[in-house]
Amino acid sequence: MDGMTNTECSWNFPVEFQELTYSKDINLFSVPESLGRVLVRTDTNQPLAIHKGRYTIKTNEDCINQMDEAIRAANIGTDYDWNITTIDQGRRMKATIDFRDLVVEPVKDDYIHFRISLFNSYDGTWSFIFSAAGLRLWCLNGCTTPDNVASSRNKHTASINVQQEAGKIGKALDAFMNQREVWQKYMGISLRDHRQTVEQWLKTRLCMYPTATSNLKYNERQHETLMRQYDKECSALGSNMWALYNTLTHWASHPEDNRAHDAITTRNRDMQIAKAMSSNEWKVLEKF
Picture 1: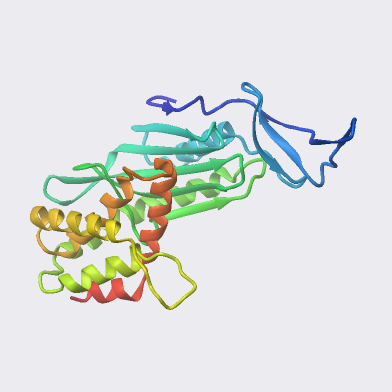
Picture 2: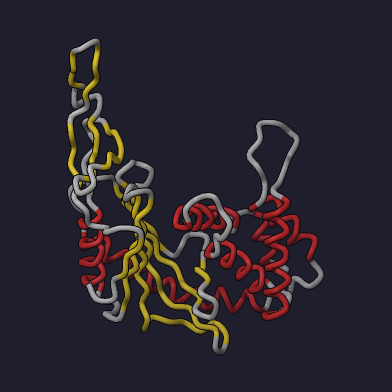
């Protein structure tokens, strides 16, 4: 596929199941397949995960080829680039497909183009997932929306329904193109007199630590980072909901100084923001 790049290691390496064994005294015993098999990356002999008998291998190559086939079947454009990242010796894979010619301009000289993200894993942490959203070209923010425009999740089976996925991609593009009206609406919602409300919303929705007690704690450093970015966006875009929206997308797409791998962090933040933007508090902000 044209325009394809890859980081960490080759994404289409060979994998196979191998027998699990255990030793007792000087004897070696086999583990029944129904209880577990080890999935091995055979080019490096790296064990990737242990799975029970019902697990079916869905290779990265299968995912990439089937999604490319679905994109071609959707017939939404041919000018797109692939970028594929593998994580943790190949246990997880993330791919993005950016469409250079599918662009909206919610405000003059501020362009957003259509992006599809694809996930797969060999260790069972990620199903075969694709989601479609936008990529803000001005500063390369990934534009998260409450429903990511469209998404699909598939268990590890032999193949996906290409025509069904192609239909989802086509609908996703329609929704993306119509998203411009929402972004333009955000520009007209003034938050100049609601800074404390914004600050509290960011704290409770994106900075709270999970706790089983009534003593709520939050990540002060993360909260300060978000507020600094919000002030920066307000300086460039005005004190409006568009500035708050771009604060969220900047945070999601800039995972620097995070302990987890960037691809894992951005995916988790996308999900967190989508949930936050579906909250009643966000709907209140939209009415200002």
